[in-house]
Length: 72
Image (cartoon, rainbow, N blue to C red):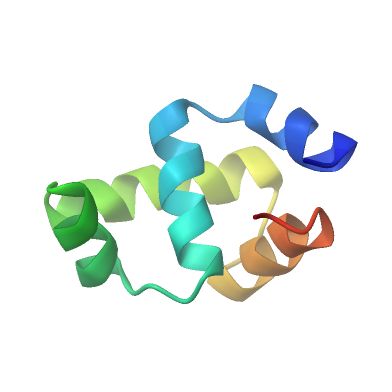
């Protein structure tokens, strides 16, 4: 795992990182909710927190920022 991703992991909770990782892999909110057995509303709130912590304007920008570290 790259240094960049380790730094992002420090900023995000485990739940935020797990959802962000799925988002980068192209999962939609309802797919993330199903996979993690949580509500779609929770996914929206958590991803909103991720966007704020990463200073991302939107989902695409967050994926770009996270993708810079090549999440695996």
